[in-house]
Image 1 (cartoon, rainbow, N blue to C red):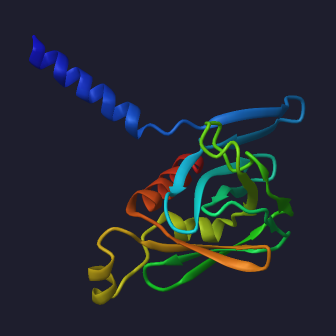
Image 2 (spheres, rainbow, N blue to C red; image 1 turned 90 degrees about the vertical axis):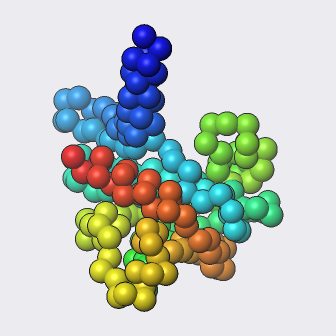
Image 3 (cartoon, helix red, strand yellow; image 1 turned 120 degrees about the vertical axis):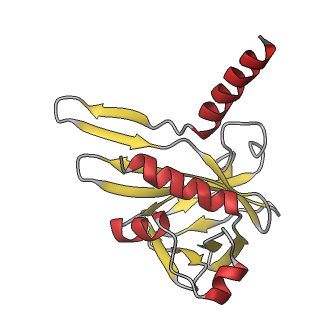
Length: 190
């Protein structure tokens, strides 16, 4: 009996852990204006900043956005202007650039994900336009040479670089970060 309970428990845990729930927000029911978004996921844990991301879709014009919450490791006020770059460096060396949708300034708790961590330090939430072409590049693994394949067994996005207050801040991304980005894109595009 214990064996069957253990198996059922393990099956339940794996479905809960791998589930990505898409949240929906109906803005105007008469005009069928709906936005959908993935939950906030941890993107980077070390380096110059900690960050969370989610992908949002505006269904009335099928526009996708990459939303990012950032807390600098050395707390300071900073800003991201409209049109500033968010650059992903892929494992094959290609660079994928997204542009910020509008200007944003840091404020206390803005980079927090609704938890106590980060709620008392300056952070920022910024939205980047995610064109379908770039979304497809993030969704699929890039074609690698044998050397690149050896260097990057599973991580296909190497770095994330954010331009804030006129300077570029870089972070290396982990295999888990890349997996979460791909998973979010696949779930929002269903």
